[in-house]
Image (cartoon, rainbow, N blue to C red; front, top):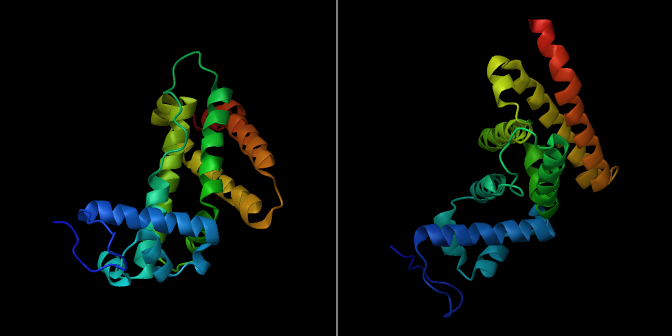
Amino acid sequence: MADTASSPGPETSRLEPDERRDQILQCAQRLFSEHGVGAVSNTDIARAAGISRGLLNHYFGSRRELYRDVVRRMMDVPPVPVPEYVPGASVADRVAQSLDGWLELLSRNRSIWLTATGIAGCGGDEELEAIIDRARDRAVARAIEVTGLGPAVRDHPEIHAMLRGFSGMAEATTREWLRHGRLTRKQVHVLLESTLLTIINDVIPDATAVCE
C-alpha cells in the first residue's frame, strides 16, 4: 500500500513503502555526506525528500534509527567490482583496484563513516556497533576473494583473524586521512596496499608455518 500521509507540496508523488523508505535514506545519506551528520536536521531530510516531517517519523521513529539505516545502507554498497580470482591474475593489480573502490566509497561518505566508526566501539550504540562489525567481516571476505586466499583460509582459519587485524589498521589509517588530514588518499592507498601484500606474501606463510 502506498503512503498517503500529507506532505509539504502538492507535487509529491505517492510511493510504495519500500520505495519511500529508500528515497528517504538516499536523501539522508546525501545530506549527511555533504554537510555533516550534526548539521542536518530531520526537517532538512524531510524537505529534501519532499515529504512531511510526520511521514519521516512514520518510517523512522527516531533520528538514531534513521542514522543506523543510513550507515547500514552505505556499508551494503559494494565498491568498484573486482573480477573473481583466477590463477595467474595479478594480486597486486586486484588489491589496488579494490582499494581504489573502497577509498572512493569512504571519500563520498566521509561524515557518515567518521561518525559511525567513532561511535562504534565506544559502547554508545550496540546495534550500530553490530552493523560496523558485519561490515568489517564483509571487508575481510572481500579481501579473501580479491587475493584468492580462500583455500588457505579453509586450512588455516587464523588467516581470517590476521585479516581482521589488517582491517582495524585500515580503519584507523583512513581516519588519519579523513578526520585529521595527516595522510593523503594516495599515502593511505600506498600504505594499505603495501601492508596487505606483505601480509599475503610474507606474514601468512611464516605465521601458518609456525602452526604446522
